[in-house]
Image (cartoon, rainbow, N blue to C red; front, side, top):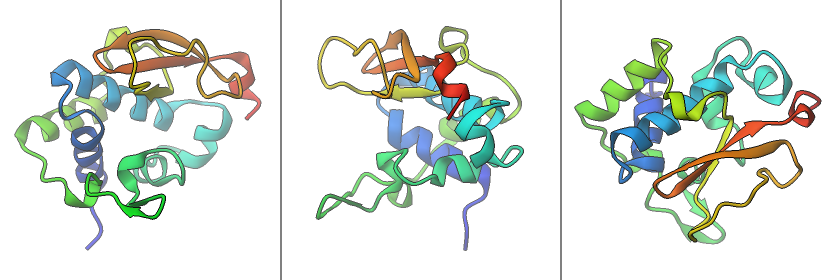
Length: 148
């Protein structure tokens, strides 16, 4: 049985930011929904008018969607998550159009596994650092993104 879009969003929020508290999880949900709603560029084409599933399942975007990383099993994947009420509440909050103000129009997040965030991500120059929340760095699109 395929997961609903709500279920997918709750699972990826739990997997990508479950240890980051409510704001960290809302920030990740905001980025995903920003990708769903962006009117230009790669994510606009991928979402095909608003598909959360297409954004989450786009190859190469989220480690939590992969069952294998390199040649090893990835136990922290969306298929192994068991979302709780808080994850569904955050998914519903984001689906209904809410976004975390600190995240703005960010289309990317990453965990650098160090105290500082790279100023540009992705490394092709399409995103500039906006802020850091807990372990994640968040990036706004540059004009280069619109050409993607």
